[in-house]
Amino acid sequence: MGKYEAELARLGESPLLKLEGPGGILAVTERELVFLDEGGVRRIALAQIRRVARGEGGVVRVQGEEAFLDIPLKAFPVEELKGFLEGLKPHVARARKATQAPPPKPPEPPKPVWEEEPPPVPKAPSVELAPEPEAPPPQPVQSPPPPTREGRAPLALPLRLVALLSLAYAVAFLALNPGADPWAQIGAALGGLGLALTAWSASTSSR
Image 1 (cartoon, rainbow, N blue to C red):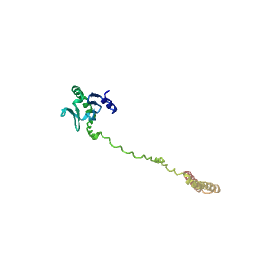
Image 2 (tube, one colour):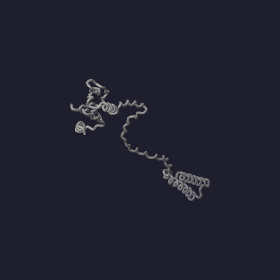
Image 3 (cartoon, helix red, strand yellow):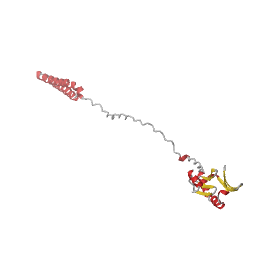
Image 4 (spheres, helix red, strand yellow):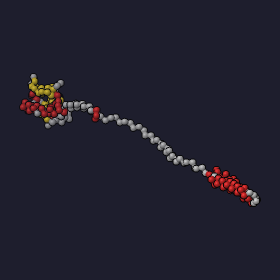
């Protein structure tokens, strides 16, 4: 292991690609191009590299967006350096892709009005109502009872008594006056009998 490679290992770098020459070592890590020589360690981010060209003073300049890295031509065999720099391109492309921010997502179109869900309607508290009392069924209208004839019963007894007295008077008149005028006897009998029948009939009809 050369001294530059040992120094690179001591720095904890894990190169994906490396080139060691008499004047230094070039290494490609996940994110950087590292150049190590007697002057120390210099770096440039892979994603920042824009071009590689030969510069003044016998160097190859790796130009970045804000910085650059000069590699002395005497540090490496020219053909090996050229091949190394050619192999640098895919690593630069990979680093750029990894550092690029994802494109912003386009805003979602607003939902049509008919697709929007209406806000939930709060439920009204349930109220239990007491059952209404049932109305009693209508009572049938009862017709008044027909008047009894008991109210007339007190008249039946006096009428019967009158009928019996009339009949008894007629019989007593005939019995006590056997020699009376026949027409008077007949009149008394018919009068007493008619009065008795009338009173008796009135007593039976008053029940």
